[in-house]
Structures are given as structure tokens and as C-alpha cells.
Image (cartoon, helix red, strand yellow):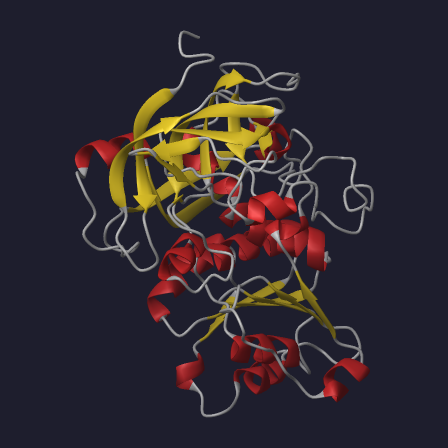
Length: 386
């Protein structure tokens, strides 16, 4: 491409400081170095983690930074030594890389590659520098992705190829939300056919977890949320029963225990609330119930329960990116049946977004971006992934 090897000037939503509104700026994006790939971002989702970092609550948050970690785009150019990707490839940046070399990648029990963890946590590329600048000032990267820019540079181990026919404004959600919730059910909990599941929180992550439970063959999927407006959509995703904690005068775990003859087989906490984490664990059946924490609580918070809950056979687990290991491709979305899902998620086409909004006076993800409903209908979800 004509831009290969050159600095690209483009627009990006820049976070100049904690608690400050994003500003659409012209930024410079340097060419990729060895082992790196420069990507033209076509679409990006907005995740609560972006808001969390911008608020200043993230202990690893650094500024100024280009946020965003749920995007999809096309490879513009590659750095020296990159052989798995070529210009024009449709790709998804990944905040959980896979180097296939570190002891974490060699251990099938985890997906938490540590190859570039230290530099990524500091908002830098693997060589300790940044590829973004604005007004003569360096900008930090975010979670190894920085999808709130028309162009970004990522490590080649932090990239997955997708089928070029896949709609990028839809599959961008595989970069975080869908993969995290769906994988939590299939990879982390390993939900079994005929089981009973409870999903606490019916937002994006919760609905993805419901999808995973349904794909695994769960017989009962109980959705728990204080907002009854979410229940109709949740039922379309596969929820069989709903519980609104505000309609009961007893702890939610007790309500679920009564509904399921002692507790559920699997529960999923998709809110990031430590009290709900405890309720999700205690809603599990004595002897074999497993609870998976998906939501991220604020820094410094702690979880607690009575030790007897664990002594009597319940298992408490956590998951990141749904326990999904990605080596150039995404493999978890394998299903041989036809599924139709209406997935409600906040997302925006970045190109349209930054050209139609000159500046952002308030960072309120629920009002400054469009909440869209879209239809995902694939005979084999994995068929869209290479």
C-alpha cells in the first residue's frame, strides 16, 4: 500500500486525562516495527472497561491514551518478520495475546499469555515505546489494542484473522464481550448438557454467557437482573426463567435454591459487584456447583463468603476473555446448528463516529454512542473465522 512504511495521520478519540471527556484529534501513527502490524480500524465496540479506565479508577490507567479494545479492521502494513498476516487481511485485535512460547501458553490450563504483559500494562508496545503521537506528545496504547483510532499498531501475537466476508461492524464484538461471556460457559465452567445455570446480570456479557450455556445444552438458564426491561431480549437469547431480586424479600441465592431443589449447577457473575459474586457462589448446589466470576470489580474491593461454602464442594472460579486461547485464529465459536441471536450492544462505526462528532463534551457511553440491535445468523459461527 502507498502508506506502507510511512507515518499515517488520522483521527482518534484521545483521553487526555482521568475524568476528562474524550477529544477527537488528528494523531500520527508510526509504521509497525518488527513483529508488529498496523491495522485500519473499520468498527469498534465500547466496553465498560474503557469507561472504567477513563474514570481514573483503573490502577493501570495511564494518560494521555487512545482507548478501545473491541474492534475489527483490515491490515494496512506489517513489520519485519511478520508472516501470519498480510495487507488486506480482515482482523480482530486481541487484548489477550498468544505467543505460543511462554510457560503460560505452553500450559493448557490457562490463556493468560505473559509475553508482553509488562509493556502492555504500561501502555507501550513490546519494545517499550509507543506508535501514537499528537501535538508532539506521545500517546499511550490501551490493552494492546487502541481501537478508538482510525489506525492502530498491535503486536502480531495480539491479532486474529477473520473471514473477509464477515461483517466487521458485528464481529468486532468478538474482541471482548461475546468471547468473554460465551467462553466463560464453554471453556471455564464447561457447562454440561441438561444442567441448570444462573446468569447474574443480563447486559452484554450476561447475554453472551446465556448464549454459551444454550450452546452447551443447558436445560434451564435462569436470568437474574433488577431491570425487567431486559427480560424479553434475554428470553430470545435462551433464558428459560427470570428472577428480579427486587421482587423478593429474601436473598437471591435462597430464591434460586428453592427454584432448583438446592441450587444451580453453574452460575455466572456478569456485573462486577462483590456482593453479587457472593450470591452467585451461594446459589450453587452443594457438592458440585461451580460459580464463574466474569465481571470486574473496582480496584481494592475484596470478595468474601463462609468457608463452609467451599468446604462442602462448591467451586469459585474466574475467567479472562472467556478462557479463550487464540493463536492467529479464534476457535471457540463452533456450533453445527443454525442460531439466530438478537444481540444488544453499544457499538459504533468509528469512521462515521469521528467524522460526525467534532468533539465529545460528556463521556457517557449510553448516550454519546448508538445502542444498536443487530442480527447474527450463521449456520456455523466458526465458519466466519479463519
